[in-house]
Length: 326
Image 1 (cartoon, rainbow, N blue to C red):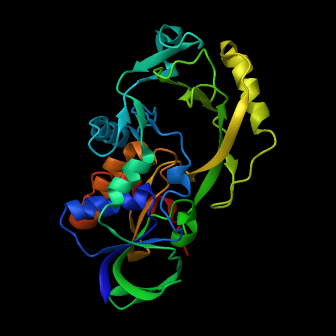
Image 2: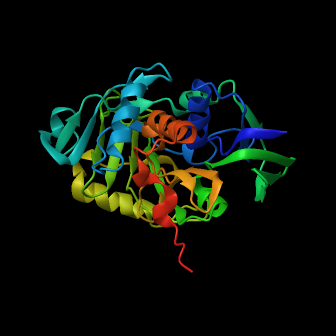
Image 3: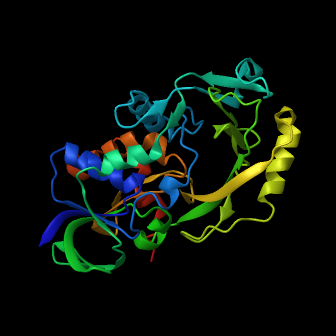
């Protein structure tokens, strides 16, 4: 049997692409997920932010469209507590968060989404082959032959939504960067209704979590896909940024931490489109930490390119990253 679409990766990129293909009436879609459950990697290792204003022109239309959908709360539970983006506006952050310092842009529509519920919604009713790893793919007539840990299958279009592995699968200059996230012990001074605060100038964010604070120094450490190694200097980097830019947060006692990965192309733009070297290979990779916020828009765009040949965001196509010189 030759499937119409096989999508590699059941994280947000792959799941939303499958969801929007189904919404357009496409039924023959198979997702291959190497893990026993979805969201093991980047899609389940993030801070759950929905941040509409990115400061990056290539992301802004996708962020606006995605945020508008998620704020309705129809796909997953959404807490609209707002955000304060230090360095992008002139509002005094202490008006909303007494412990915080700085001038910021107040974004009332921002908030926190239930990422597990959102991913589950995208995957509801989909044909997902868990524990199935793609080993290799080769051209086979009018289709691609896939060799997987489950055996062989054929597809008319292979969708590379492999996240941190997307560069390897699609031979693209796309690679993951590690980021550390810390959660403090409970703090009497923290109000769970506070918005999240993001210092975009100095690279530091924090929000209420588990009666304490969730914080990140916004570090970027080159990594191997799926290898989460804690840096011995990450906590020092966080402490230095807090002491310098947010000293009123006080003495923070860390309860637990984790490492997540954000995958970027070399130009830090997403990669959405057909591969010019192989017309049956389609990429949805390099979402660089914007995967949750933009997921409704990314899936809709991917489906439009796949089904309609939509060229409205041709700037995101992989052609720009591929050197085809002799």
